[in-house]
Amino acid sequence: MSGPRRALLLAGHGSQLDARSGEAVRAHARRLAASGAFDEVLTGFWKEEPALARALDGCRADDVVIVPAFMAEGYFVNEVVPAELGLDGPLTRRGGRMLRLARPLGAHPLLAEAVAARALEAGAAADGAVFVLGHGHPRDPRSARAVRAQVGRIRATGRFARVEAVFTDQAPRADAIPALADGRAATVVPFFAAGGWHVGRAAAAIPANARLAAPAGAHALATDALAALAREAARG
Image 1 (cartoon, rainbow, N blue to C red):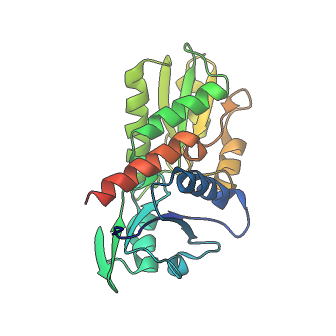
Image 2: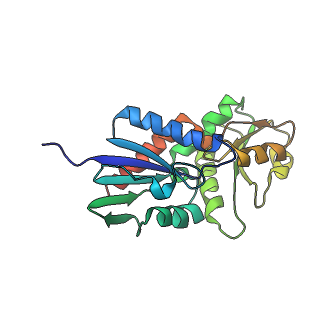
Image 3: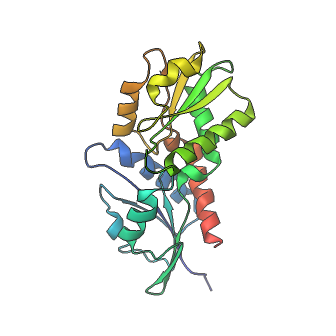
């Protein structure tokens, strides 16, 4: 007798103006579906189709793990995703189905490895400076906290001479990179779930002589992080 069907739902921001925003989440979903770990792997977005509110329409699973493809705790993870999916908290029983809300992508330690990998892809050297560029929020410290946690993990490896956090919406901002680099070659890794408007905005803000890497949240290691977060939530 087979056990209950299990599904994984990746909840992303998405964008109606830039397809790159959702493509990273869809790429993660394709890799996770190929792994065979779940009977169904679904995607849902706040700002594009399929909409989060309808993401489970047609889902046949008895047990669904929802992993927010966001880089920090905050408004989207704690307010938007639960509201759109009708969640009561980490565990919700509805219509004979268990819905489990996992921690967001950016909380997993593997994202530090993804940042380092992106920096190396962009040409960062051991004697260089790596800047992890996050969103930040002047009224919500959780966004910056997630970036700084990953910065601490990368520093602990000793892989680069200097590793610093900079932000688009709070200090220190990207224009502080020359001073923080202190003469070292600078590589900037966007701590975002995907390419799109935010990364384009970041590219416009960084110094002309700094290397800009691809976003950490779109790396294949982020797929592994999503899988690990799903397993963690499935264990309850």
